[in-house]
Image (cartoon, rainbow, N blue to C red; front, side, top):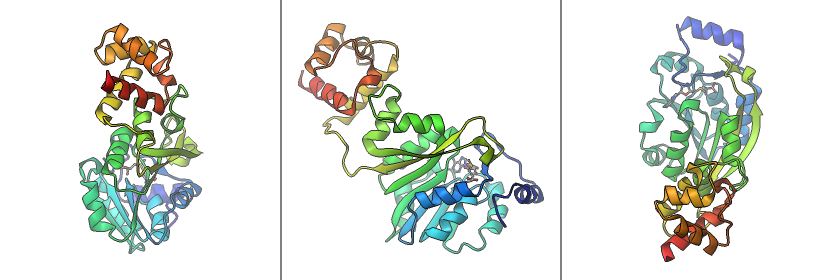
Length: 283
Ligand code: SAM
């Protein structure tokens, strides 16, 4: 069965009495070029173990199973079990775990399931858990790459260069851990039900070492969060408020890094944040 054929999919869902859940972020793909292209661009191959988050009825899963050595798909919604048993019947290298991905010990899962394989993530993510799931996946520190579909706006913010004016504290955190690359857009009509916004596929390739040298990561990210907390304020005001310091001290700090105190936080590069962190450690 072509899982992306809308009519056939509706028949399958009705036969199993399945109802979409908005709170679980359920929008299933109904354009076959999309899962094919996501799987291809993820780099899945015989030497790869792929963790998929949220297989739904398996549109992306079957494409990954064709390319990868092994696929482990984690699905929150147990009502999809009988559907997946049917749709993945011809995928012997694939297993489905019914669990909340946010509750899993990801390094343990990788050790147990993907021994001898290159671990990677490929998923059409449930949008309501984008930030916690990307955080958990990058913190796990055990994946070679993450290829994920998210809302276009999120993908754009996470992939624009730090300092370009469009990012945010989470984008800095992500780009401290991984190189971010926006791959392609997917319009709403490619999903059932159609979401309100366009989606994009984002590739994150974790770094072996961070792109800047930082000796106190906690202070680095406190500085980043402070700089972005008051978006319309200048850096002096943001740092003074966010790091609980006198404005004069904040101005001194900023000047010592060769920065303009009236600059806005979103204009700072990763290197600027590293310098601001080091300057606080000195003085
Ligand atoms: N992969 C399918 C596709 O592309 O057609 C479905 C993608 S749908 C956007 C997201 C899927 O993630 C749903 O099947 C949903 O039930 C599942 N899901 C939601 N929250 C989850 C969680 N915390 N852990 C695992 N799966 C989750």
